[in-house]
Image 1 (tube, rainbow, N blue to C red):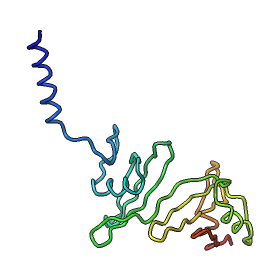
Image 2 (cartoon, rainbow, N blue to C red):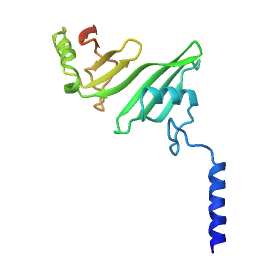
Image 3 (cartoon, helix red, strand yellow):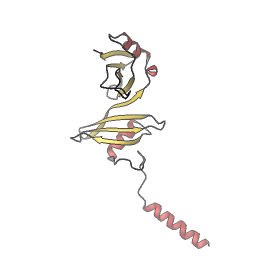
Image 4 (spheres, one colour):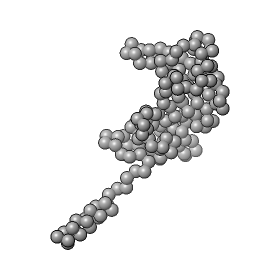
Length: 168
């Protein structure tokens, strides 16, 4: 009986040694898209804990849009661009609730001409300069989802907010 146990243990260890290593950046998910390792590594460094659900290159393969879920269930999108042979994160986007937006941003939007209560807010972090662009949507499509592009954008940087594209 002991020999059988040793033999089974040896076989299990041999099988484990021959198995491919588990990814340290993005755990593979059943049916998950194949993501180039360098893209997954950059996305994981920018959003630790992300589980990548989709990654699509542009036509020239010089930009990637990566979508995923964070451990808390929040969905995020990262836009990556190739620059001098290296991938860099251009922006990290997620939907946020209007009441959670910094007060200075809400005040700037409210003071702008044609202000409105947004039906959707996208927070777009800009890693290059540390600013955050809040994209505010006012219109709804027939199905109730936000339609068209943002009606207003407010840039928040160093505790200051400024409307950068007001509603018409």
